Amino acid sequence: MLPFSSTKPSTSFFHFPPFLPSFFHSVSLPLLLNPPKSSHLRFLPLPLRIRSIDAAQPYDYESQLLSQHLKSQSLKIAIIGFGNFAQFLAKTLSRQGHTLLAYSRTNHGGAAKELGVTFYTNPHDLCESHPEVLILCTSILSSEKVLKSFPFQRLKRSTLFVDVLSVKEFAKNILLKYLPLEFDILCTHPMFGPESGKNSWVGLPFVYDKVRIGNEEERINRCDKFLDIFAKEGCRMVEMSCAEHDRYAAGSQFVTHTMGRVLEKFGLESSPINTKGYETLLDLVENTAGDSFELYYGLFMYNQNAMEQLERLDMAFEAIKKELFGKLHQVYRRQLFGTVEGSEERPKIQKLLHNGAPLEPSKDTMEQERS
Image (tube, rainbow, N blue to C red; front, side, top):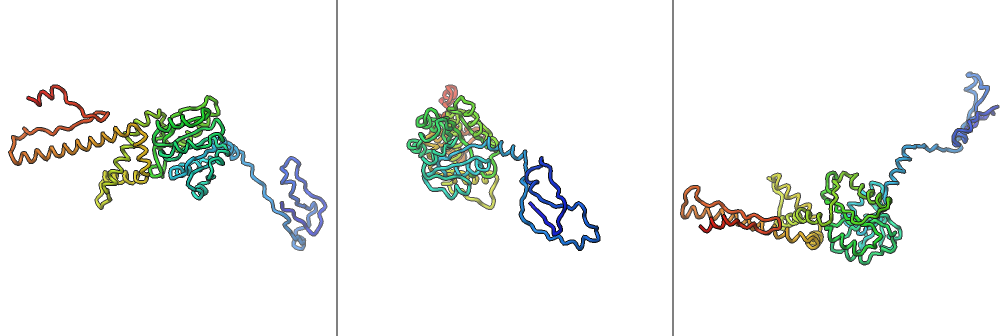
């Protein structure tokens, strides 16, 4: 409000209509009905004094609607275990406007504060905040131990429980074993991490299985809201069963981690003449080396398909060695004994079946070899 006063009293004041907002009514601005002539204006003293300052707040209907929409789409999410991967997820969840809580045995209060996350050192206090969604973000090896001692009785009975473990059959079984029947269960696997997803999540696969979701509309919508977090970031949403996930993951994720760790043990190093293929191998080592050995061990220990893939890798390496040594033997034989051109036998490549067993030769082939 900017009331002004003049040393010369005025005979009348202008009054604002009553239908205008109240902050207009607080403005008192005296106006003279018989203003002096222009020649006398320079002699008219008008000392002004600012008594108070006020500003009208803008009323933006569109921004209010947007705020209400974002609030309706936001979730109250608690994260159990606030390590490297959990903090990586929290950055995006916080940016999208969700309310985040976190609990971890290790004190990550400083990191949580930077991300706008309320950190709890006691799981009972976290549960009493009644989050809508809980994300299990512990290591594979410690997941069952955490679930055994977690105070689920302090949560709402319809809470949605989500896991992001890299093995899904194991996660599904322990969640069904320890969670109350009233809890909803969503098994997920963001198939990317702080390295592969540091720039963007666009096109990266997000696998999920709605293991147990209630029939109420509110619970279905809550599950969809959570999945929409990743869909908004451009993830490739893939719905499949936990068993199917583990079968595919053993042939992709576990093999990838195995080759990365083998090359790391090999001592792969950059050189001034790196080729594109060699750069790809270096990137593989960098991506897998950032993950703990406990994660890799969990991929092996809790995925029943991992042993089969490890055996197939070993057999494939042995087959390559035999092919190389077989070729070398032919060269030595030709140099020592000499052979007719074109008469030497071609090296036999041992092929593997899908389950890792060597392909048995046909009866015709065996008879030809005997003759």
